[in-house]
Image (cartoon, rainbow, N blue to C red; front, side, top):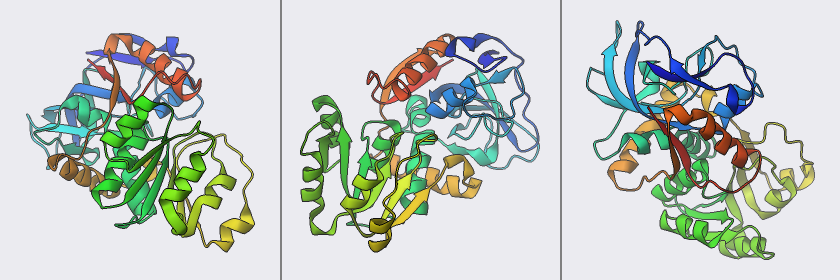
Length: 331
């Protein structure tokens, strides 16, 4: 099969495109013919070695996938040949990734793809959708009528937060960097989209949240601002961190505990299969109701995986602002 893989960690140009043996599904595994894979920042961190994991070379990159079941291993009960599936959580803890024509995946990390959902959309919403759902509901226990702020509304996680929060009747504020991105956030459900460059950005947030302040702050940026965050929160508000591995900001301890605030840090891949499946079920239901629309920014052929990684890195680490939505790679 064709695949994008590395023999060593390093810059995007260490990614090779070539032939690897097609995997055989083991016990409990499903062989998926990949229709689409999505690129996430974590994929670039693993490829570069910034996140050190036990890797067996050649190593196929990629966490997310969507496609069709080609074969099933012994003991598989959830899926049959011909089923359309999507999933995430690959390329971690010794598992091979999804940037290939075929991927052998344990059935516990796969979910049925609704008829109305294309493979591109299913892959684009996989890791980011599960991440957003875990943060909002497993951690922050979001309730109807509460006000959610997502710092970075047009990123993969940000757009997922907007749609999932709106699905339970929450009010959503998002920051954006342009009028075009403001329109996008409003189109997918944000009640207020504010340009973070506006000098009165926080005044707009404060006015919309009214006297109560923000109930949930979902931080997607690499450099959080705890002083600002805590000041804008309601009493017993919940703050979510899922980005910024190297960030070391000063923290306003006094204002934090005086407001009875809660702080949650989490990584999607720490969630159990059952916890992630609950997220996937909610996403599928939202899709069936017409409320799920992951944003796709660019699509690359698998042969250009190195260019896809470079674009992701330019935006995640370089702050170029040339990407809005997910990068999709198709075999």
